[in-house]
Image 1 (spheres, one colour):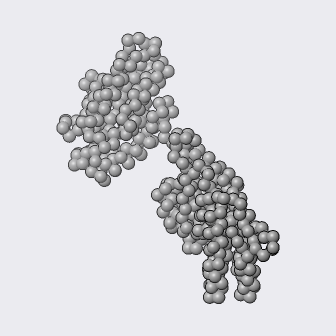
Image 2 (image 1 turned 30 degrees about the vertical axis):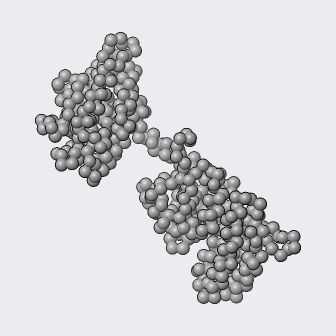
Image 3 (image 1 turned 45 degrees about the vertical axis):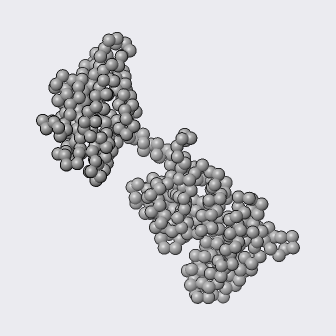
Amino acid sequence: MRLSPDSTTYRSDFADDPDMAEIVALFVSELPQRMAAMQAALAGNDIERLRTLAHQLKGAAGGYGFPKLGEAAALIDRGIKDGCDGNVLRSRLGMLTAIAGRIRP
Amino acid sequence: MASNEPLPKVLAIDDSEPIHRLLKVRLQYEPIELHGATEAQAGLRMARELMPDVILLDIEMEGMDGFGVLQALKADVNLQDIPVIFISATASMEDRVRALDLGAIDFVEKPFEVVELKARVRSALRVQHLVKMLAQRAQVDGLTGLWNRTYFDRRLLQECSEAQRHGRCVSLVMCDVDGFKKLNDERGHPFGDMVLERLSRILQGGRGSDVACRYGGEEFGIILPHTVGIEAIEVAERYRKSFEVETWHGAPGKVITASFGVAEMAPGGRLMSVADLVAAADAALYRAKLNGRNRVEAAIAANPAG
């Protein structure tokens, strides 16, 4: 995961891999709805759903060349396993959302 | 693996669509055929239909998880030998141990290193290739290379059930080398072995759909699916003629022959079980021996005396 020269966006580790271009672009284009689904799950107190989504992102993000995104998702997964309260989860989801917002294919 | 073999099939069961896309791209240059299921039940169904050579299995899935899928696979006699590689973002040691104890062959952590994933898939495919080869070898006769008795019993049962279900015929030819014991005594066991091998090659060189097996000793059983008794008699007659003209190294002018008994299981016929069919073919073979050897006798409907 590379920081752009102006430090505002992240690009995939596989940005130069032509085999990966299409699915990385798809992954990035689906990120906003994935984040929205996680926020909705937390707002609706559907913690199990939030954990599934976080767990899936944790498993996939690194494979698409966005390890930091995966680590942030892992913090939410871990937090739910450890029984953290809503405030902690909200703050961790905030961090994840911030990183997701800076990701480009 | 020979190049004319079909590509090995790999089935990935994971509830995350991005993981399937990733596997598809990352394994695209591997000599495999990749299939995917995004849910446990669909995965089990595909496993039964595809009979994959390796299964990549996610642990944490909604509904039935990977451990449940693994247990279902191991409980199914047809699927239990397929190597399963767990792929999971859950790296806990307890989960790894549990997966291996339940029969998984390997474990890959998500996010996976592509090179490592490929190596582990290749390694699992090698194991599966050996398992398949051993399973096949356990069904092949060592001397003649024909299917052995174990395979004969299983295959005949299968062909008979299928014939009955679809209202088709299946025929059975039993064959025995004439005077084999005397040959062995006079010329020694290596000569006897050569005779069995030569007859086996003739039986094996018949029609592609016929299944030649060594029944035991100098007796052979040839299963002829979708074949009526009349046709089976012709097939047996061809085998008989091919064998009697063989020439024998170290025994010039020696004529060695075999006798054949034929029976058919036909819709509405009187032979309704595998045991009936074998007994009838055996009785016909016995009659061929009594009637002078080197001949084909049949127990088919047109010949009620059989």
